[in-house]
Image (cartoon, rainbow, N blue to C red):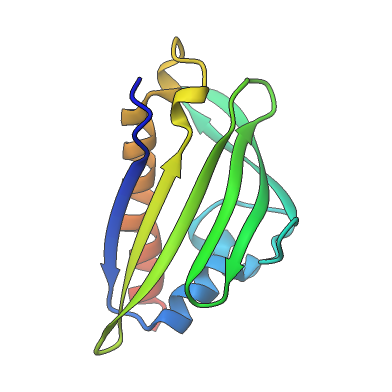
Length: 144
């Protein structure tokens, strides 16, 4: 597997402040992302959540690494039962006229077991495309 990170960009009809809230407010996160017991945009904050792929539940362990309010949020991404460490970085860019461009970079995917199709780059691409392109977009643009 290539060491190239997975990168996706989306533009939302929503101001940066609303996108930042959606990324950092746990009650809002629960409505479009994953169910987490708690989340705080504080460096060193640890959070976990489960996700299911092909009938298998994966427990994600994450630690917030970088917070630049309204601009950038980064956190580690690893799994309880599997080796590998990766990093998710989300950048926000004000595009004017109440629009925000989000750039998500997920690096380190090659450190996960490559014999498991759930860890294939295509699997992450499918997941992040849905999360950023459908779930978050619908949350931001339909919450009124």
